[in-house]
Length: 443
Image (cartoon, rainbow, N blue to C red; front, side, top):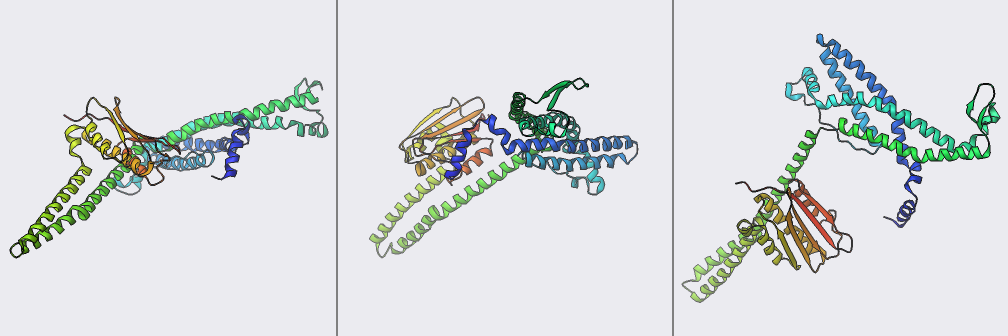
């Protein structure tokens, strides 16, 4: 962010919102949305009434079924237009609804017809056409007079001279009896008062229009977007891919650690024992020394295998639970760490494992990036969630954008309906809270 942009933002923040809103692009875009919404709503309503009633009337013949399907297809196209209009003018991004699944019905035109008729999304588009028309008409009748009256009366001092110059009226007429007598806004004080009333209208009309478009937002999101079931299926599919990718990455890591660590050490150990076997008769002292070195290699290989097993799933977590496992984890952390675990019961093993490895990764980030001198880990649970909070007094600045592993951790937590909250201002301190669903262990 540049210094010029900072200055403009600071200057803008000093202007009250009620004064700057009428001049912001958002207010004008919302007004245009209401203005152009009426013709779109009229066209949709006319099509909805015409096609639906005709289709229902022809249901006694075979023609009514494809006509209704055609109507639903038309409304899905109008829904795409409305989503694009809401995206361009309201900044509302509504995902595309699920497509019509016609292939499962055997293919062909009739499969497409029946798929459209069974699609709840298509009927919601039809319902939008019926509901949007009265609301668009109401919004248009409210917004347009307020907007035109506000700007017209605000600028009245600039154009009121047109009335006595080109008409027989000295100003705007508020009252007249048809016989030449009336009340006109032509005195200087009356002109200024009219302009002041216009200023109030200009200042408050954008807020009224924003409230009107709020209802449009609800209609577009609720009726023209994907269903909740489709959203949930898409979320589950994304979570499944995340879990699969994480499992694949873990398997590759384990294979790499085995290949580069214990396996390579065991291969070298086998070769060294083979050489010791050859020298056993001709040079027993050298053979004994080689066996002693091989014994040390065995210890190192066992230690590496033990560390690898602890990385997969530590035995202390299975045997004694989350509290002792986290205490053991904190003892190996390079930053002095205080552990507080307030759990009266143990969660399900899967949740317990995720909590352990989440804490492990957060403490690794603390050791690598925070430059902290002390860290704390607090674990507790509510009726529905297991909460883990890792805090340190380091330099802060932790985000999911700087390659610290927090982005991947947030995705893994999201795959089990968890949540990662980061509070890490520059200069510190850092507090990261992980929330997991609480699940009791199965009996």
